[in-house]
Image 1: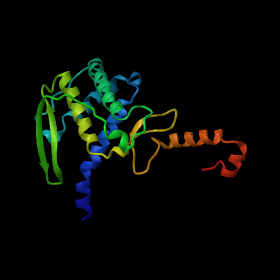
Image 2: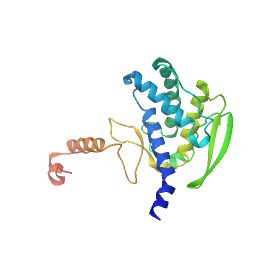
Image 3: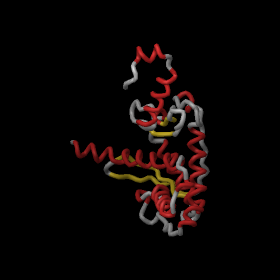
Length: 206
């Protein structure tokens, strides 16, 4: 029973990991990337755009120099950021009522495949035309992004309320802040703004 449950939950865990990576990629400071980062980033985007579940012949070769990888990765980041900023604008509350009327449009030209597996439900996989082209890779990544977003509850997509962060992240249960460091900074800032009499009553320890 336990092993069967793990097998059933594995696709969801992989999906979550991929979505977390995409959110981090969209908000990464690419000016700090080194040559190896560009090559690894291009490879990761290729894996996201052309999942093995879509068929072994779909994944195109993505051989490139670091400069070529940079030229392909940078515009994809801009497009991914555009989509997530549309869904959750910076500083906006991502409550369900705010997301109810949100629309993010991603143009698509290609094939739609229905994939079945014993361990999980049927899945729809989008395979864009011209997979080896820059446009095909970008389209594939964006389609995977919206597909993964469609698998999570809107309320799990949050912006960190810490003033110096404001990053978009995928929350676990009642998680409010992106990281523990953000929570600590927010708590320290609120304590600093309290009057001395209030600090004494509330205490300064967590």
